Amino acid sequence: MFLKRVLPLVLVLVLAVTFLPGCAGEEEGPTGPSVTLQLSHQWSEGDVRDRLAHELADKVAEKSGGDMEITVYPAQSLYKAKAQWDGISTGGLDLTIYPLAYAAGKVPQVSITLMPAVFPNLDTAMAWGDSEAAQILEQDYMLPENVKVLGWLYFDGAIISRVKQIVRPEDCDGQVLRAAGSEFEYMFKKAGAAITSMPSPELYTALSTGVIDGCIGATSTWVSYKLYETVDYVNVPRDYCIWFMGEPLLVSTQTWDALTEEQQNILAESVDELWTNWVPAEISQLCGILDETFGDAGVERYYMTEEDFEVWKAFAENTSWKDFTDNVEGGQELLDLTLAFAEEYSAEE
Image 1 (tube, rainbow, N blue to C red):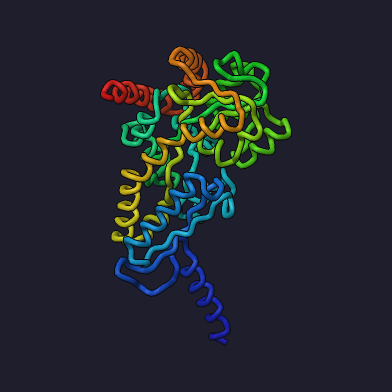
Image 2: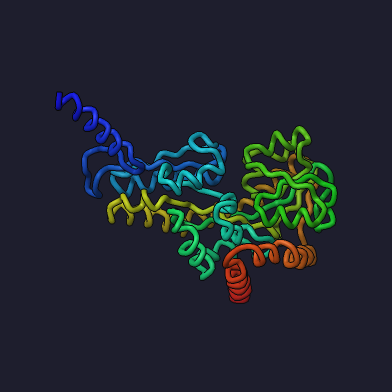
């Protein structure tokens, strides 16, 4: 009778330990217990973020002698786009490359990573991960949600439309737009646009069927989802850009804490090496790829000027910036530090 009662409980405990995130229940190797980590992202196979995920998996496996493995799940095959935040926060998911502004409904402060016209160029945006503002965002607002940043990623964005070229705020008037981020939504709405929200994988159908007229988002996403087949106009961020989105590599603190010190070092070193070499080379060419791809498809291209950028910046200051600082706890500090960093970094270039 005792065995009948105890054995099922023992079996449940064994299974629970075996399938904890980051734990494969295998024999111990040189770096500690062998682990298989799950990395989820929303983009299609072959997208730059998908390729980065596989580069990370290969490097970690090499450095650990196969004791650490990362299984990559692209195209929302494991988690839906926005649900990845909850997966990381609860420990159900180990790793993700995630558009951080998607989590603004839970942590409003992350909207600083998709704030209109705060960065003049991609280099400044990429460097922001080492700023005081980024450190405050992670320490005060993300880590309490069990979310740790392993590596900051930023992508520049293009404005596309089926209806007309969107050059300045007044061109948004009357268009139905998807803005990717609460502060861009706020700004475009103030410019007269009707706003709808949806993750990137749904955009092709929405544009093709006329549900939306246009949207703003990452150059790499527009190419990988073949949105050049659905629009007639693109504002290319070749010289100036108002949209830079933070899409960092995140790890659950539950997963991180369950790793041995050696395994943590392997993961961190792998990220450092990729962010030093692979990431800058790949991201720097994405705008050129979009420019050529959309041009070859017959899409009318426009290149934002400095004057255009300053118009957008002034409009953002009176709309989205004000909304963020008025309504988000700590928003004023995050915005002031970000603007100061951008100004100082640009002056040193």
